[in-house]
Length: 332
Image (cartoon, rainbow, N blue to C red; front, side):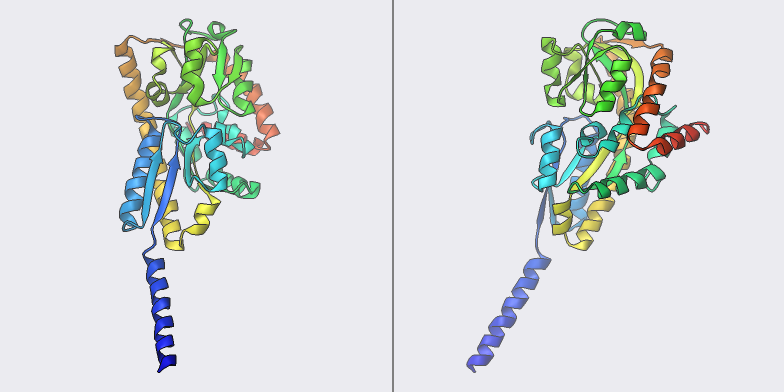
């Protein structure tokens, strides 16, 4: 009888553990340095809503925007350690751990939006290439998706920019990674590497004279208050990257892990589309605000970009990727 009671107790304990595992909840932190309106915020909100709904409440997502968890560099360190679960940001900062991501900071890689979207599409050569690169780097994070985010333009606090001669000597804020600095040095500026969260104050105090960003970034961080001259250089199609901590992937059961991966890929499509829409809308809004917006002669910007593309692609061992993008451009 005593033995029977013990068996019943053990059986109940096993059942209890099973129920606990099935009913376990997972709290995920999403980190991004920008504030709304921004495609990264829209993507994060989609991830939050979709995961909570489709997991039946098993996954709870908290969005930490505006650099609440620190700069991109800090957030990426936390991602590696597992205290951040998902990261949405630009490839320039991710290049700290995956140098190949700086490939996307080369200017004038694409002719237009259609070529750009064809180049970065899910399941395409670039997408698969960077999945492999991140995996082979063994940096404790998983590549989930890449996306657009809008065209990047130049803004500054000094004067209107209509040609490359107008940017000469400006202290130009660039994100982390060597390629962006190389590009803007070739254009005649003096590159200054600063975290995005420090940019407003840098422009306000003169530590930096100029910056380049997407239009959502320009509006969301209120750069129009300190850099009222906006030049439509359209030098770079923003490439956004979605990364997940390896520790997060290991703690999630297979069905929920697959749900996270699928949901993030859907969010990446939203990010790309909102980048296009918000760029158009914010440009119109800035014109109404009285921001000085100039069209730019891009010819010399473009000619100075080609040698940088060739040199940096060779350093990153991505000359084949550059050749593929140029070949694709012939169709557009």
